[in-house]
Length: 95
Image 1 (cartoon, rainbow, N blue to C red):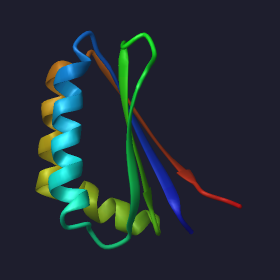
Image 2 (cartoon, helix red, strand yellow):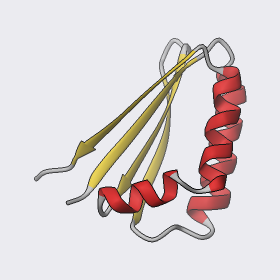
Image 3 (cartoon, rainbow, N blue to C red):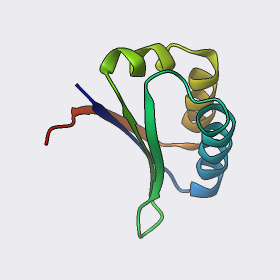
Image 4 (tube, helix red, strand yellow):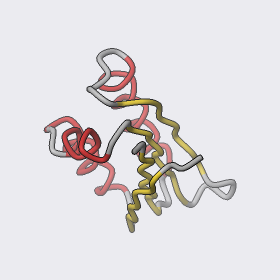
């Protein structure tokens, strides 16, 4: 079953997190998409107090494989430096 994964970073410096997420998405998802990856979006709250990273995957197993990768972990660690908080949730996509 397809899943969506949403990570929301609370921050006073959204540009730092945006830069990291854009670079990760371009380098790891757009150029050489991991198995099972469907799409991604980077969202900035209208008041610029948070940034969200939304991805969709064919199955939760493909998501987990990518979350265990060094590039994913490095990107999230760098974002955590600039964030005051982080929330994650995985959702099943139903029709």
